[in-house]
Image 1: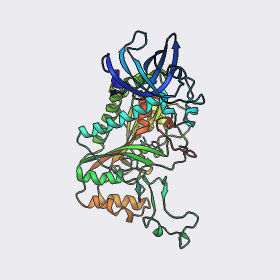
Image 2 (image 1 turned 60 degrees about the vertical axis):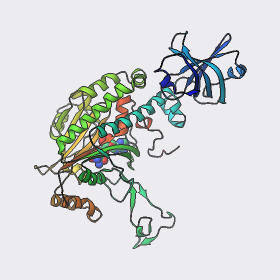
Image 3 (image 1 turned 90 degrees about the vertical axis):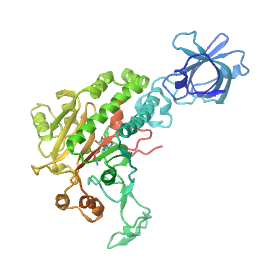
Image 4 (image 1 turned 180 degrees about the horizontal axis):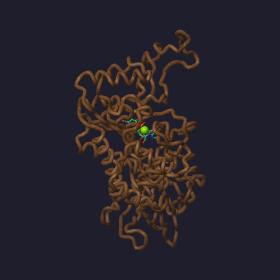
Length: 460
Ligand code: 4AD
Ligand code: MG
């Protein structure tokens, strides 16, 4: 007996004897002497048609099979006589593993995304979410392949940390203290009595750790979960999201932009080439322009635009923006989308942002007012990558931290990297969910994460 996944069977040739297929019933249709069962095993978008002949022992049970029921089918793969599919299974035995009751919520063909979020534990069984999470898996693999093929090493950076990389204060605290009986010292919580003997939080970025490893192993990357307690309920922010963070020694911000562009192109190309059926579903049902957007992202040369120039273009745009544009103010999604969707009509890399809106670690430019930062902006989403060349000069870095009122003591190890064999180095963070939004055309981040965490929402 050969236990097979449907996606493998569809790549082979009939006939094949003595097969075992395990999956869930999508639909059943009876005709004279036969029952036709559409079975999906989650391995691909396509169902396999199973033909049950009335001569089967449990035929009367088979005719009661409901949508969502689990089945194990022994049989033979043969060429299909009916239209619509190439192969079908002639069942020799159908074991009903579990009969789903009529209350199974996924009866009707289409449900709203909002409804499906309320049953996030069942939604991967729908075509759309099955496709989403298969793509998520494929693209994760592609990320590792991209870096491995280029000699980058994969580093597991800590999830619990004592430092705030971005300095934006959006930290989830990690504590083992009894919140109803906090130990006090000078009227403040005494974290010396906490698990780590000091304050700890969930990481907002693996960057600072990745930098230490870049200065040892050369080119490295991290790919893992990051956490931000931003209270912004937007369609592109989650409290828990995954970030891909490469870090390269002996690399300036130009090399950094080159890598960012190469990575986004590689991953969109990979999706087009390797996730065909699943991508087609999105192009058909979710975003009619998806193929054009993906082709454009995969093949066009990205615009490289200094922040100063971006501000000029936005000021001259004649658009009614909600947020004001001015040198020293951060670009908002509406500005990013104007640049990528209306003005240039392709991805744009904005670089050399004002230092006042960027974190302490970015390398200050000779003009003393901008830093060697770079953001990759794409149509429909806006910022998908944020990165920079890092300040490798000890005195300048220390001065910047002082200026920002930071306590340097906890960063002694970070500063050490500038004491011993410091070199120019650069890196960035690619928001994995935002990339998946780009690839699928799904317009809410909640729908590309298995169990999303957003303000006031942690069901499942
Ligand atoms: O621009 P950010 O904040 O950069 C960093 O954290 C750097 N330390 C990365 C580095 O240089 N190693 O975040 C990087 C990317 C953003 O461009 C965005 O795509 C994504 O992470 N991102 C979020 N995605 C979902 N939900 C959120 N709340 C996000 N915040 C950032
Ligand atoms: Mg950013």
